[in-house]
Amino acid sequence: MWFSKTWVTEGFFDVLQMKMVSGRALSATEFADSGNYVINEKAAKIMGMTPAAAIGKSLTFSGDKGTIVGVVKDFNYKPAQTAIEPMILAFNKWNGGIVLVRTQPGKAAATIQALEKISKQLNPAFPFSYGFVDQDINNLYKGEQQMGSLFNVFAMIAIFISCMGLYGLSAFMAEQRTKEIGVRKVLGASVFNVVYLLSTGFTKLILIAIVIAIPIAWFATNKWLGGFAYRVNVGWAIFLMASLAALTIAWITVSYESVKAAIVNPVKSLRSE
Image 1 (cartoon, one colour):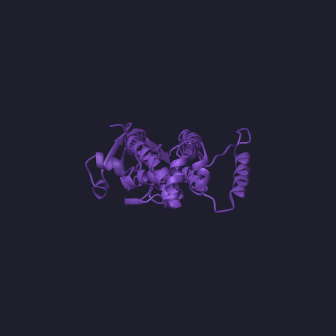
Image 2 (cartoon, one colour; image 1 turned 135 degrees about the vertical axis):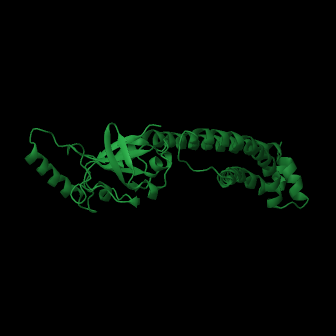
Image 3 (cartoon, helix red, strand yellow; image 1 turned 30 degrees about the vertical axis):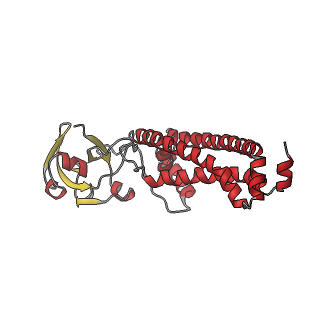
């Protein structure tokens, strides 16, 4: 099993607000932890130890021998497609690399200016650059976000085309059954009865389409989610809401022509050819 190793400095666990499950965080000033380690829960599990039992155990990694002084709660340091892997955190001996800074709300700009000033004082030849952790995390899922937006656009186009087709079909059906509607109204049929008559056929077709679409949608969704180590479960409630939404949109689309045909004077309906 591959173990990742990360070099950290004083205050790393406090800045990222990590929770220690057992033991303590690394500290060079208070405990002289230059040769000690902190591991995550996953690493302790793979080693066959509980977090409490891991404290004080010797650990040699990449030729560096040390002692485990703490076990940190598992955290994601890779995209959600990847499961949490065992990690070993060691104290940075070289005091170089990336600096992580947590700012107070509303003071990000002032903090960046202060850091830029310090950077120019320490090494004026080295260009100052910075980024935001939340933006870096968002970039990890930029592809999924773009795909979601694309699916939304295609879904809206599909709904619009479907509504236009239903509207045209309902208008055609109402015109074809003009005399039938007139006869029914003369015999006492109400507007609701006529609307129900014209909508029943469409409802059956939509229910058949839903029965066909749900298994395909369930398979495609779970296939896509299968690429993520951490994902939500697709429950029946989602498909139920989607089915109700499809029926509602279809009824609204069909109801206009249905009501229009139902309120026509039956005399005019019987005279029409």
